[in-house]
Image (cartoon, rainbow, N blue to C red; front, side):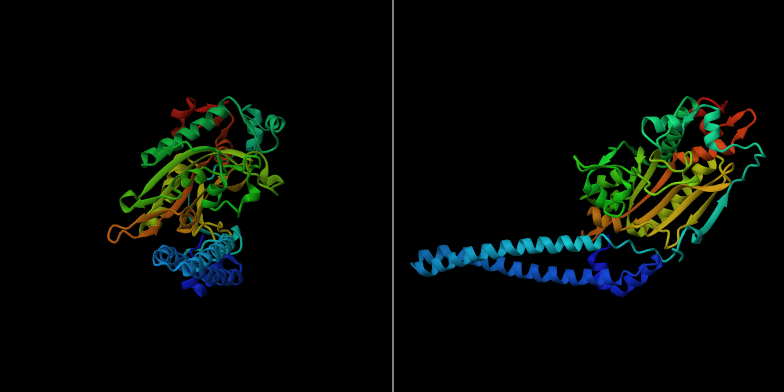
Length: 424
């Protein structure tokens, strides 16, 4: 969430910066400024009444001591009147603050100056690519056919038990899932990330803190009786560990990793783009999260990009890295790099990771701050996160790209975790 200081001190700059998202936010920003003025007026009135009330409270006893009963009783009557007025103003202040928060929560993050202009993923800017696309020949099979051939993933059984988008992993398919999770966690540990095992459900405050609410409420599974949500990614509970926390500069960087199941409704998804593992309602993912000093967050972003790239290289998958354009940038992100791997049988690129810097956007919602060394003032921290990695499309590419007449080869980096080198 943008801060009031950002908007009040740089109104035109904020409006201009947000235009790269292909939407004009000038009206809502003006409404924010007007609502903030209303808040200041109500707060000023309330402060004046409270000051008068405190002054009267100090005088009443003295007036009685001096025998000025009539003046004392008049003061008491005014105090009662002030109490009612104060109560009314407190309610007004509560209402205007709520409206102000609602308005602010509808404004996305300001994109970094390096974010390219564009309207959709077709306008994303390719940073670099690596690996070699395999030549599979005419008999190549897509991963859903391979899964059935080797009996490692059962989509129909998942549909029977739950519904579409909830596959059942079997035998070597289940072991491959577990191997990937352990591989990703071990690699994260090598890079200094501390492993977290978070809850799979969150409350509203957590959803608001990282920006899923209210922006992505329709994409989340909700349990109305408990007012809880299934997590769309481990980023949410892990980052919320530091909600309402004040850090010191010595605490940076904070590096956390977590494996979790993830749950997304993916409302409106249909057709061949969602077949097999391409888009699921429940899937596994290892996430990396960093909380960093503002001066170092973009250096950290580049380090996280290189780290995710190293994972894909070790899995021997052809890949490309793109910087998202303004029209494709997530609501909370200031800059995002997407990783795509090539799916040889489907002959298309599949997104497997997003690595983002949110700058102070999440931290402002979370009230995640740090004290500076010199003047001990509190400042907002920067938050970053990345998929390292999401499993479904990684598995899809591994199955398709490594298929041979003898079976599906397992990359060398995974073999110590799978315990086998071939699915046959």
